[in-house]
Length: 305
Length: 305
Image (cartoon, rainbow over all chains, first blue to last red; front, side, top):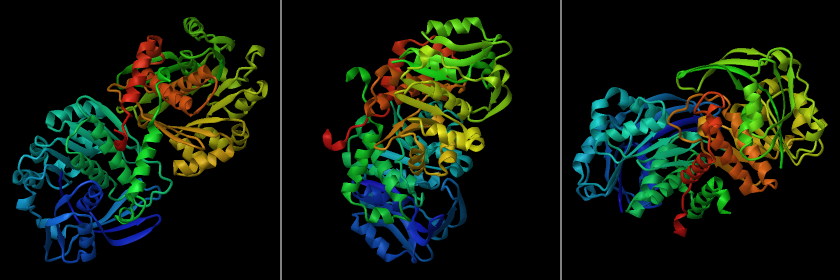
């Protein structure tokens, strides 16, 4: 089944201890749709300016991403600059220029309106609501958000959360949203707000999924060389949602596999700037890393040997 | 097979957001030998003062712990006081009184000298060396250490590490010892120092085991109520080493099971002050939580369904 992805697209300038990348493509919708494209056909909704490279638009098209929902507006694309500390755990934002994103008002093309799987990237909750208002009864809706919206627009966020099945946040966002330090208690609070499946992204410590019936732990892949962490969370979301859309029906096994695929794609994207590692990624590498995830978590119950 | 445990025993005063415990038993050798006693017979080496409660000595005996190596000296026991912050992630040490521990010079009883499994708790590396000098060709030696020794006695630590099979440290200790931020690269450095099996304890983020051939991730148990984190690492070590000693022969499967047993016992001990939760722990609870660890990490490779 298809996946609708809405989120930012832009040009990033990133400094890491290993080098600098200037004006490379980035943003939620880029990372998410490229990783999801390994599993399913993506319907993309977003906006770029006239400076966005045509070659990259062509690359998305080559991945089977439908671009009818991509507006190309006069002016410059959303632009972000950041610098990472020596251990990649700290990041300073050097600049954020909204540009054409400032007046973004998502319009969902007619042919996207029956897309059964929907990923609402981290944008204002009122825009996320507007997307849901334009589509017909999706089978599964996932949402990402951040501290900014939790603090500034809690009512709008509460309204959209009621219509969401899967929440993807990092641990500090989870604590802020739920008002609970403990993630298990926090998950119970968040389930009362709407989403029944809660995914907490913990960076180098992996990701956890909490549902009403289960708890699942996906470790982060033990990489020797992390090059640029930008986009890891959005790439995770793309692998996760892409796999769910591919499977169509959702059950516990499929959700867990989706968590591992999300972690797998996230582990690749951080090996190079922008989506460069994903551009040269082969399906056998994906399969190999998935197997490694299995290998590094498996153990046998002693009384069953 | 038997397990020799050497480490501190003392009286702790602990303040958490949930209450205060005054002069309760604690220390590496207490936590480690009580959890290990679920699997194997422990030979304990340590020192206490005359204020150490006889009832607690009796409790250790009731767990099958051999106490010929426990010196009872005139004076007061080692004493530590600490206070945890509201989220239990930060801890201030309020006082440390070495008392009888100050002149501790471990003497290994004759009947302990052929103990095949040895756990050298976090004490000065010269004392750890002295223990190894007094015992005959152990089958497997594990060592815990801390930043204090890594900084102050690096040469003595290097000498003892050469004779160690398993290193147990937390992530900041691992980074300091190896001089590498990346844990995979750090593990390679540490293997050159001696230990071939490296266990990095990451608290609420679980524990990882790195061997020359494998990487294994054990999550932390998702507890709703952590009451007092004191002793979690030593309890982990006890479950881990106790299980290895019980099995006798070591292979990858057994090491992984030992990691899960270590995590299981650690998850219980933090549910109450001191070893109180372990005192009332039933074997079926251990088994149940081990099964839960399996349940929260298992997933199926999609192409094998």
